[in-house]
Length: 163
Image (cartoon, rainbow, N blue to C red; front, side, top):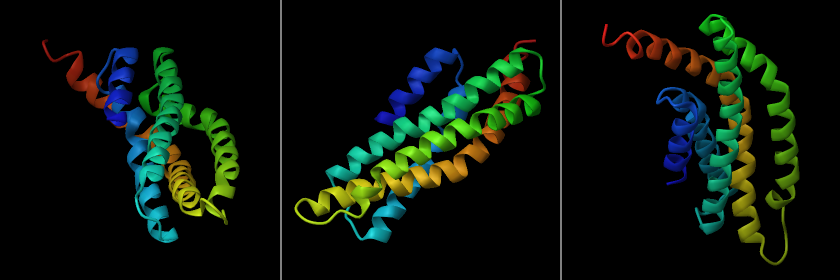
């Protein structure tokens, strides 16, 4: 449900069905990381894991939005699709890495929690640490490429479809 809401809000913001697809393509990577984290740490998918997944949807979409928004701006300035995507990925890489690293380091104590409430803390920590780490490593690289693909498809089939 969170993925659908994120996609529909982005579709309304961009007034396009293709740009939001590129922006939310980091979410499956984050979800894969969350499931991998639960497997590695031996925690079940509990309500705490699900809360972490909702958090990952928001943070992954935010990272994708940052890249796609800048790529759209560069494209509107007349750059080629490839140049716009590359420039956006290059300019937004440092802020995305900084915020993601701060987030992962901030929730790291949950991953190594002991004492009362360990199960809930480790379940939440495993999901968000592994999910955000994998999202940061992979999605920041392929979201510009996916934007390029989606923009080429939109420009090829979208505007000239009726002509």
